[in-house]
Length: 209
Image (tube, rainbow, N blue to C red; front, side):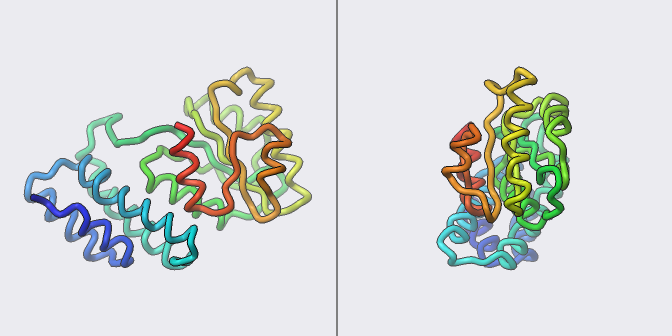
């Protein structure tokens, strides 16, 4: 019986070499790639996210764990049947127009990907119409917006309005986050949810699927 928990434990310990060794060992033993992904890697990153929320793990450690996860996924990708990556949804994520901050947004993107979601990170300083065109092009069902400045928060409201105007609001769940953003503001602009950090963003996105 393959020990999936060992992969998760190695991820939590930020031991990339061990993670990759265990994944390769699993494949050698004939374990299905999708099981290594969901029962080993994703399960482990779920714990990383929870520990980040509780401040038991910090951003540098989470980044190392996410890097190990990413390296392992690269090994598994060729073996995962097309469309059978375990992806539970498609996410378009970006920082709103006028805002050039991307570290927090990139961490959220990595955590979402690690949770088994298909993520399209479209960068910073993204205009509302660009978000809309990407949502349509990717047939995405989640939009994640980041703003790190109080002066750019209104662009979140404009983006939500643009999605509604495009007639796709009923198909897309909108999540917002960033230092000045609050749950009250998310509600005020009509977003579906607010996450204070990358770990909770990942959990929230999965709960909305």
